[in-house]
Image 1: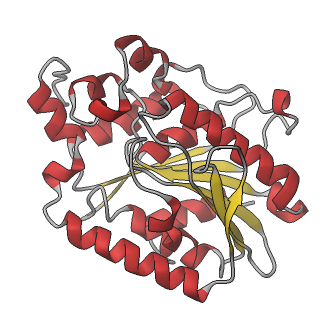
Image 2: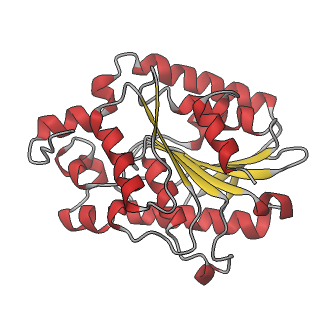
Amino acid sequence: MTTLRYDDPDWCEREYNPRVTVPDMAIVFGRWLETAAATRGRLPHRAGIAYGADPRETLDLFRADRPRGAVVFIHGGYWRASSKDEVSWAAAALVPAGFTTLVLNYPLCPQTTVAGIAESCRRAIAFAWTTLLGEAERRCLIVSGHSAGGYLTAAMLATDWAVRGLPVAPFAGGLSISGVFDLRPLLRTSMNELIRLTPEQASGWSLHETPQPAAGAPLELLVGGDEPAEFHRQSALMAAAWPGLARAPISVPGRHHFDVVEQIGHHGTPVFDAVLRLAC
């Protein structure tokens, strides 16, 4: 059991800043960019489809030939970094398996807030539902994301979609990879220099204290086995908070924060298998 030390900046930084614990981060990011470009070169797609007014409110659409469903993928970066262009490889195995894949971009902190980013993701999903997706894709729509995107995945499951003109429960399920749901530990980290969470926001926007959605969908939770203990605790918090929806967290052996998510681009891995468990 982790001893919580939210008042200790050094502890918070070690537990929550993956750059501290992943020595080969530059190599991993280089691989991300190379694999993302190769995926875009190999798979037909529509790039930079605008779903909102902000220049970063765009998405890339990778259409499956005979879709059995669709997967939305939301990138990480602690709400203040990264882009869809770094994670196009999310579509590499999903599209051949019959899942149309939508890779989202969104505005970043400090130009917006965590809540503002969640609203951008809602706009993207509502736009895709009404404009881009066919019947088979809407019938089996899965939302997924990594790190900050894992938080946003759960936020999408907790959204009131009926007021946005969508079905009450539009998703077949959600897949959160290395998600952070209790935002309070981030207040003492270097990441918050750009996220700019206040104590009130960190408490109010923490999803582990959000009631379980009455008309929700199952939530798969995966964490790299080599990630700091706090990332494992974060997924355990969501499993406890939404016992009727969230499944027991899965620890993926030998994977750290930045390479566990790559498994969504490969058949026969724990992350890809989680997508298949959610599929209709």
